[in-house]
Length: 324
Image (cartoon, rainbow, N blue to C red; front, side, top):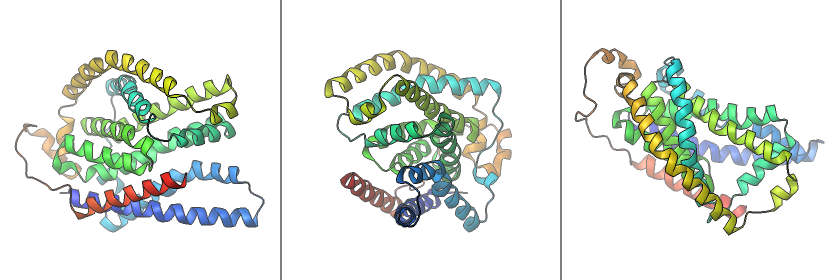
């Protein structure tokens, strides 16, 4: 049975790998710009397009080699029915205002430099490449990492705890205060729909919709405004407050609908969760009638690897915020 300890070890490795990769890629970029005619913007665009493969896919390959596993062993890959696809689209639309409220509130006290960087990148890249870099690649490789490899290691603690802890790690890996909180919420949601469909395709679809719609909206806004003005003009406190009130109003309407639809979604996929909870390798248990509320063995999530991961991530975030 996969257990939290292995998941915590993988996350610690992922954080350490990301830190080393960031340093090495910075050194390589400086050397490349010093010895070639490539511009900083061009190099940054190349890194943005390929970073998900470099940061997430390579650790997945290493994990599979070390554990002697196949990708299909650790990634739930049941086929999504047409009805579940519709559920995922609707749930994503209803949950999006919640994420937007969290993002807007966080923007009141945390730097939003990452948004400025994204706008600058989108201004340089064609729309198709922006979608590829910011919607397609994250939807594939971040999901394989967090709702595939990582989530599979927390099946023994139950769906709620697994969703929260993997969502928490998903927030930490974003590496800045502004994105952490809303990424935790989004990550927990992605984990839940993956568990209830027993399919990574559910979270991939939702993740793509979240990011893809944001890219499309940003492209539209940029087409009607001056990009330099957008980049250099930070919203005032009053403007942020207005955005928060607007999103809160929308959330008051959509959140009850989200809860209602999600309950229907859970009921429809009640049997799928058996395969997930009792591990992919033991999916024959899906034929048994097992109560989802029965007592389970207690597994310790916050071990030494978990604590080190949190501490290292916190230090990296603080250093990153100080340097920007």
